[in-house]
Structure formats: C-alpha cells, structure tokens
Image 1: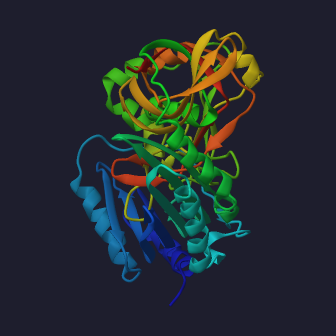
Image 2: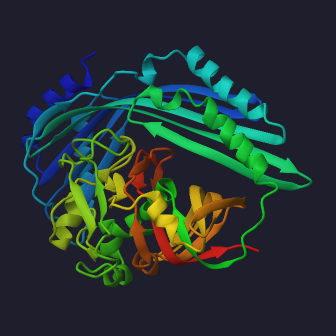
Length: 459
C-alpha cells in the first residue's frame, strides 16, 4: 500500500479540479504508548497505532465542511463529502488570511527517541521511581503517568502547499501522597520533552524529594489568608501566564465575545515597561514548537504584551482575516479527528535582569510559591493552587508552609508584577485542553516574578 506521502502527492494533483473556493487535506499516521501506576501496582500499559485523515472545504457563500476518516481509501469521495457539507452551511462568508504556499519536509530528531526504548526498560525505570517514593516513611499512595508518541502528518491544500512534518513527544508525572491522622498532603513533578527520552531519566533524586516534601508538609503550618508580596517560581509563573492570560489572547475567544473584545483592546496597558509576554512555536526544541501549524502557516514569535502594552493575539487564518491582523501560526489540532482551532504553543514571560536574591532581598514578609496543581479561570478572574510554599522573612527563605491558593484579577495582577528574574525556565509537563481537544503538547515558562498585593487563601 502506498505511504501517506505518496497518497498525498497523488491527491494534490486532483485538488484543483474540485468546485470549491478552498480545500485542505491532512493525512496522519501515529503511534502512542502509556504506562500508569496507582500506588505500588502497575495499573495499565497501552500501545496504539492509527492512520487517518481529514478534509476541510469552503465554497462561496457557505461555511466549513469537515470530514474525518480512518481509512485512506476513496479519498476523492471524502473531498466531495466535505464540499457538499460546506454548501449546506449558510451565513457570514468565511475569508482566510493570505499565506504563501509552501513545499517542505520537516523530520523529527530521533536522537534518544522514546520509540527506540523497549517497554521493559521503560517499566524498569518507572518501577525504580515508584520504589524510591515508597521507601519514604509516611507515604500513603503514589501515582505515575508516562506517555510517548510519534506522529507523521502530510498537509496539502488547493493553494499548492505540501508539507510533511514529523514529531515525537514524551511526558511524565510523578506524584506522592502522604497521610497522618486523617491529614493528607501531596507533592509532584511534571516533565516532558520534544521526543528526548533523557528528560525522564535520572530522576531518582527528584522522586525522593517529592516524597519527603509530601511528608514534611504534614507538619507544616498554614499561612494566614490575606494579601502578601508573593514570588512565583518559573513553573507556576508559566502556568499563570498560560491559563490566566494566554487563553484570553486566543482570537476565536476574543472575536466571539464582546466583553473580551473590550477587555483585550490592542494598545491597552496591562503592566510595567519590563513586562513582555510571548507566544511562539518558532522557539526551538520545546513541546509546543513546530515549523508549520495545522493550516500550513509558518511558526512565528508573537508578542502578546510588549513593554506592558497589549500588542498581539493568537490567530488562525480565519480569525486573522476577521480581525484584519496577520496570521500567527496558532491553528492546531490534537489529531486528524479534529479541525484545527486557535491554540497556544510556547507561552512565556521574557526574562529581565534580577537574580532570585535580588527579588527576595527587600521582602520583609512574603511567600515563595513553586510548582502547581491546577486551577480555574473565568474571564479575567483566576484561582491557582501552588504545589509548594515557603515563607520569606527579612529577605531570606524561611519555613515550609502548606500549599496556598492564589486568587485575583489577571489584569490587576499583571500590573502588580514589580520584579522579573533572569532565570527563564519552561514547564514541559502536562498538556492544554480546549473544545474537547486534550492533551495538546504546549510549554509555558517565565523567570521568577514578584507580585505585590497578591491574595492568598489560608486559614
């Protein structure tokens, strides 16, 4: 049977013959694997492979027609079905921002690929981490989730683009839960990489640290709730900028919501002159990196905030045309089963010049928060749970305290950032969810940041 590149090349010759304003085809073959532990037991091992594709079509006066399939036979019929669907959709005519056709092949770096590591070796590695966690007295349970995948896509459209891209991905989370007299505390770490298995090796020390921290927090005091000067580590600061601000910058959300359009007017001041927030897949080597998005638009580096002012947002070709702004290469889909929608890639606060010691030096009483356990956002309001917390007293780190909850208005919080560190780092664990498409590989990051008047939940 022909491979997906050969099938795509034959299909590309036929696209101009169809009666449609625009057609794009995506063909995909992938392999994925997952290993999970619950407590001391191996819970599940899965391995799957899939082949499929989709077609999106536009006709004059119609909307999108979309067809997905898991058989590469009768592809002309799939194209005809997408065109027929598009004719049924009436309403505002869809326009697409101009993107030059491109022909390119982007191969994955297979050095240290997880696909070359045996299942036995992966299990032995994870067994070791789990045993280390359980060697700590006071641990009640643990969980480990490991996943990897390899994907090859062929994208072609009626404008003449033909793009072959490969990507490899690996991610893992270790979590330890301690308990005593009905009190429960947990600590964990998430890691990942753009296909380099070395990212999940050599974590014996980290596994021990999270187990010991979970036990230590059982005896830790709880912070009194109220406003504090708070210092966020790069992981939590990255999650904050992704969840609380990045989603507000996705142009489909902005365009469809009048309240958000008013909040997110370009040129509006959201922070001090030192604040720059960026999203871009053109940053190399991260889980959210790629050369072309799933509409064939080249990756960019988009300044969402530059020197404190809102200067950009994230676009597909459709939203860029609607809002009269350039496409940013942010149309992404987790697989061929879904159409591409506006998604983040690598979202981060650019570093500045302050060292960590500079940031905490003049804090008389504050809280240093690290890592994360999730949170919620509603428009401009956010709530995040930190994974670790430590008091800052007279410019020095002091005692460990119970993890805290950070709550506030994202715009007020951005304005209250008064120090940004020089130690940019990225969180590459986990994934992003939107519109039923999850988990999408992304990265988020920052240097250490200091926030004045941050509201913490406590006793």
